[in-house]
Image 1 (tube, rainbow, N blue to C red):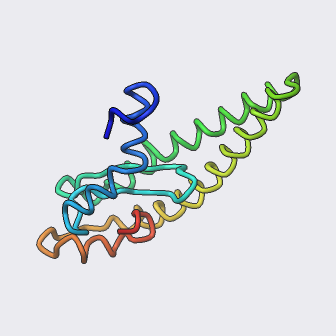
Image 2: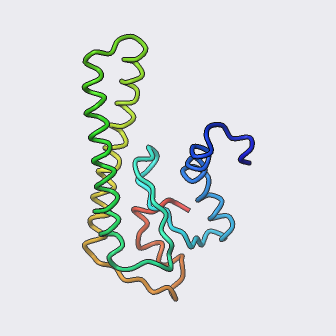
Length: 148
């Protein structure tokens, strides 16, 4: 329930989509989701919801170049800023920056492995047949989709 959630409305909504939306969606659609969650893994390096009925064979290429690469660059930029800030930081600020650096490094590592998988699938320019159903089509992309 949103009233019990903490943070700004933006943070509450972001956290819901990041942590709970897909679980709720799969429950509603009895494990046959019409929104697919492209997910890099447990470190939350990258997540993207795709509406199944809008899927086209070039979607993964667009996802990779327009979103995955952009997110990788954001991580690199943030890590660069942290490295610069660490040169003068002390005490609790230094500890906070080191913790943030570790988290971002893990996310960058995760999204890099994810990008390779997406690249492999994107190069195949896969067509799907909606008449085959969610279960069959979902298996094609299992390496880059959230587990149901």
